[in-house]
Amino acid sequence: MIRSEVLKMMLPVLRDHLVVCNIGLPSQEMHMLEDRPGNFYMLGTMGLASSIGLGLALAQKAPVVAIDGDGSVLMNLGTFSTIANNQAPNFVLLVIDNGSYGSTGDQTTYAGRKTSLTAVAQACGCENVVECTAEETPQVVADAIKAQQMTVVISKCESGNVKVPVIPLDPVVIKDRFMKQVAALNA
Amino acid sequence: MGIDDRILADLVKHRIEFVTTVPCKQLAGVIEGIDTTPSILHVPSNKEDEGMGLCAGAWMGGKRPAIIMQNTAIGVTINALATLTQFYRMPLPMLISYRGEVGEPVACQVEMAVHTKALLAQLCIPTYHFHRQSDVEELDGILGHCFMASKPVAVLMDATFWKGELQ
Ligand SMILES: [Mg+2]
Image 1: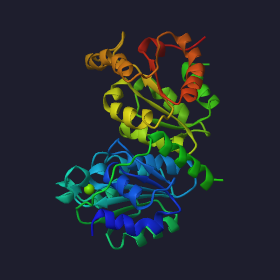
Image 2 (image 1 turned 30 degrees about the horizontal axis):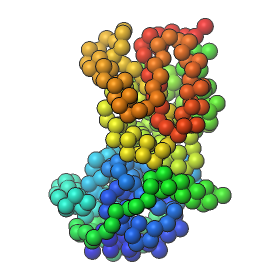
Image 3 (image 1 turned 180 degrees about the horizontal axis):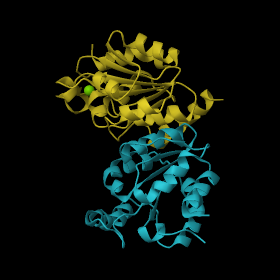
Image 4 (image 1 turned 180 degrees about the vertical axis):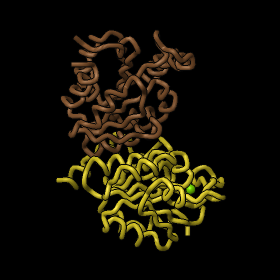
């Protein structure tokens, strides 16, 4: 199962929540599958999905799921320490770990070789780290949101992409409608 | 009131409730003050671009953010500033310890100091240089300006500024 199939299965789980979508194909796939104001699409800034998600979760009460990738999280490994040391019970970091840089032509990442992101997250002090298969991912994420326990989910899936169009939305529009959704969920 | 307390009071006055920091000796007093200010959540970051991600999230979550860092950070945050803070038009006060100016004991700091203002100018980031202690009086207005304009704004605070207490 590849990332786009995992994201498709995730839609019912994510639909009511705030979702930070990583740069490149993950954002484009989320946009194509089901565009909604509660999705924050990153159009650039590789590596910061988990940081944006954590800041958002710490600032308000509604559940936040940040969809990151293995290549992106490798660019910001310190994030696991920041997550571990700043408890946000409403935060789930979902790392779609396909072992490759999907948006740039499926070059292998170090997570696809010797590096275990699960072990890294645990070593950084994250208390709830779940490594799961692509098929198990929707249930694991749903359980994590329900438990109100900050959780890092490492979803192991296959590399590969489907063709998706770029996101035509203006960044200020993405932000504006997202912030209105944040306000509505916190009303 | 000392400089550290003045800075803290202005952060509180402008309802800044989320501050991320990467430390510098010159900023130690301010950072300590942030830790003991109940209305401010302090989330230290490992690297300044990570901090800008945290601040973007906090802003969208309804909390006014600020980042406190050294000027060396400008070198590692250009992408985050351009493609996140500026592209999505978000406010971000950056309180920056301006190392490498007159009084600096570490030669390597000068190497980044000479690029600091040029890089900020290239990014079209409003930049204010605090040199004399009385310059702290401007912070109130600068913070208001930052949130009015929804832009990142840089306040460079050099060694001469940090040297003493306000009368
Ligand atoms: Mg990947």
